[in-house]
Amino acid sequence: MNQDAIRDARQLGVPKMLVLGLQHMFAMFGATILVPILVQSYGLPLNIQTTLFFAGIGTLFFHVCSKFKVPAFLGSSFAFLGGFATIAGMNDGAYAGMDPAVKLQYACGGIVVAGLLYLVLALIVKAVGVHKVMRFLPPVVTGPIIICIGLNLAPSAVSNASTCWWLALIAMAIIIVCNIWGKGMIKIIPILLGVVGAYIVAIAAGKVDFTNVKDAAWIGFQPFIANFGGSVAKFDLSAILVMAPIAIASMMEHIGDMSAISATVGENFLEEPGLHRTLIGDGIATSLAGLFGGPANTTYGENTGVLVLSRVYDPRVIRLAAVYALILSFSPKFAALIGALPSAIIGGVSFILYGMISAIGVRNVVENQVDFTNSRNLIIAAVILVCGLGFSGGLTFQVGGATVTLTGLAIAAIAGILLNAVLPGNDYEFGKDDGHNSGSLGKY
Image 1 (cartoon, rainbow, N blue to C red):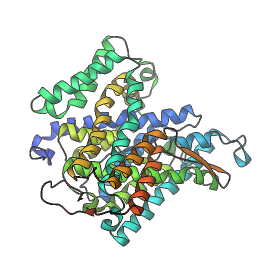
Image 2 (image 1 turned 60 degrees about the vertical axis):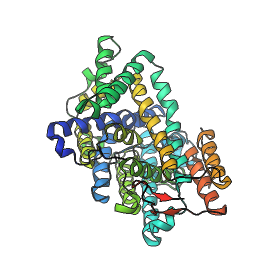
Image 3 (image 1 turned 180 degrees about the horizontal axis):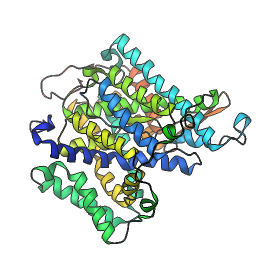
Image 4 (image 1 turned 45 degrees about the vertical axis):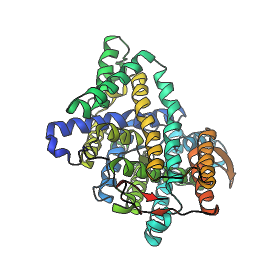
């Protein structure tokens, strides 16, 4: 399946490796900085530099925990946006008249606890074994969840592209031409070429606003370094009850992303280095970011899309992107330069990447030969898809006086897992392979 894939990018030479890392950096950058931009619109001063810093640190830490084997990038999670919005709007009791910066600290305290919940699941996986855990997460569950991940992101791609359709189409056209007809390095870096090419066209057409770039300093420290203590998390039960349950969604997304990356690369990362290791890496990266005023981290589907297009599966390239993120976090001007990238270009690129994520979910189902003539499997997939796409605003309820919101993906994951557990006829065996496909995560 992946005979022509490149698993050791060193064979391409250092210059090409550096460019490949840059491509992954561009893929994650727009979504990563969009989270603090959106949180700022809620009135909470989440810092872009801090976000980039912990995306880089979190990714490197994840690679250490996963034995340097998994080509995944950890960027800021969109799953927690509802939690930030909820805490921003809390004005009762202790939160009445509270300074937004302090509210952010309490929100980040909830993120710390959410990250620690990953460790609880990791311990369960380690104790009972990944085979028993994954029996509850067969391809009939993870496949549709992966599909939902891509389709849930689709409106964002359309929204961004609609700001200037012709510019978005230029970015898409460059990516498609380079990937289909390109040769050598051109075929490997279609995303980077699409971004740079469309950016040059946008500048020539006067579609780029460089005001923030001119005003930004070349070098600047993150708030938690420049003013240590000002961004350190604080803990309150109400904020914890808002933020921590969101970990249910993000953990399911993590498992879905690990399944997607495994299917893409053709290796079972859930078994080796192990789901418990990837959960630990993601969880601690999230807690560490929250502790110092950053958003939760999550494995990025955008970069999985880049893996599909480039067919370069070397984790070293991802680590280069993490280093770039760290460097950018100390340069407000460079961050502003990339931040000035028109949203239409991000939308055009997202059209390809987000679609790739859903396509990976379809491939996960097909390659594991899930039998949809079986009513059991059909019902599970149907309920997951409707929950994942139907609950676009999530499900909000009260717990101990605090408002808790479960995202559509969390609802879909819970529904799928419960149905898979209670409906008779589950004959899935994790890790069993008939030799037809070495990338298979299991067999029906």
